[in-house]
Image (cartoon, rainbow, N blue to C red; front, side):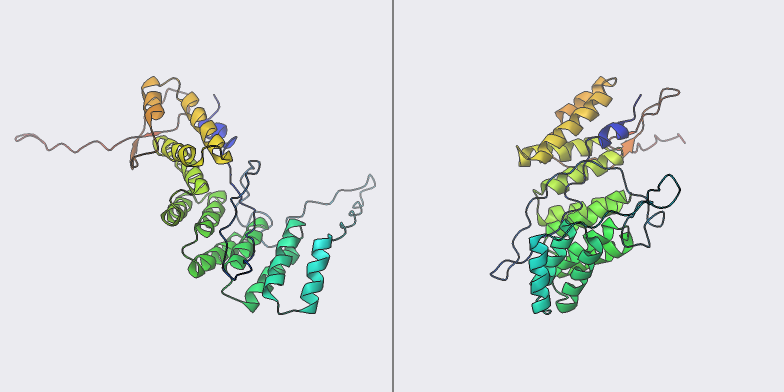
Length: 301
């Protein structure tokens, strides 16, 4: 039997995990970030230190010719008009914070992550309070396997802008991808304190609960995504995850019925108890309310 985790990972998603934040508005205030677009589910990255942890980019092994010599690398794509325009603007005014930031975004979109990272670092050197530059720097650091540096950059962004849910979600996604589920959950909850109806935070918190085998809590979070998101892509994915969990527990109709009855309202189950596992079959645990302690009667031990 396929495990529930494997089944869920088909539809679990790090929404917008690699996306960048847009720049400042013309008025000088920070507009709310656009909802990140879903991307195809991907395997978890290797733990820091196992690969690409000390390099600036994830470079595959070079292909070889039949004779054993490395095949020549294809020439880089010519820069887009937007990149050329921003490069010229930065050369003309090296102290323009916004143009450095926009050039970093343009480089990132073009897959030039080393150069993007340099531009975000330059942006921060010119204006260390530019919290979106810290978020985007962390995004690049995450992409190239520098998880510890990304963590510090996300935390700096949160320190500068503690009332922005997006930074908490980005940090939580980073931790989740590195299998630090407990700390990821703390940051999804922090995001929800700032933005109680954040679809991504609710969806990913549900994923984290499922990873911890707390399926009632997971279903409750996914129900909230359905209620708040209606026709949003996250609502469709939440529906798929709920159906996956219900299908997995089809052989336990009583528990399946409890899951079906869960709504978006209510609190959490904080403890869980494990069912008896049939011999030779792996079955994730189920959470439930802790059993009350019974005071022994007089004369008993």
